[in-house]
Image 1 (cartoon, rainbow, N blue to C red):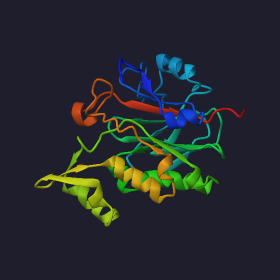
Image 2 (cartoon, rainbow, N blue to C red):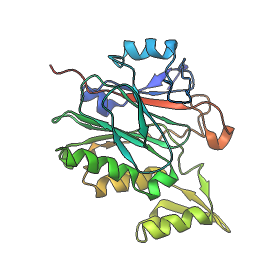
Image 3 (cartoon, rainbow, N blue to C red):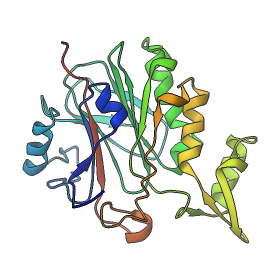
Image 4 (cartoon, rainbow, N blue to C red):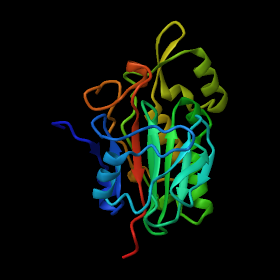
Length: 246
């Protein structure tokens, strides 16, 4: 990876013909709006239009680190949720992260889409699995879904303490030890990538249809924002839209 790209894409989703992008810190015009205003300024909208992601303004939610899934019916504010789903061609869905995992789920046959924001709180509430469930209830076969994880903090950099471990132990008594590495008294390194990939597989997504480039936001401050490394500041957007029917 060279230069200062404004965004990255997933080869898995590209091959399926899904317009999408994962922004870097060099993507212009993201304005995390308050009171329901669109976070996408003029410069951002111009780049989205070039990528076929601006048939209308993207839908976005007020993210609260939970597992609520909302159906987006139009562009703009879609409510309080950490996952958005839609079956509407051309409607861009978006989530925002600065270490948390962005996940895009696409049903290429049934043409259904979800975008997910999964931090540790969302992970212990199984937000990724909740998004898969929402798509399968709408008719998507879980084994036919494609799942792409975007840039997010890796197990190399994500240290957590006992309160996080207690939540993991309660929610996933068998799996949680495989997601952490002890590094000292009361300290563990948490692998959110593996935790969410395991949840996707448990929900029925085929392992061969899950893609994760394992790009750590905290390691690559030249490309990404990291809340853990930088504190409050910029954020990254993930945007995807079902393409128009051929």
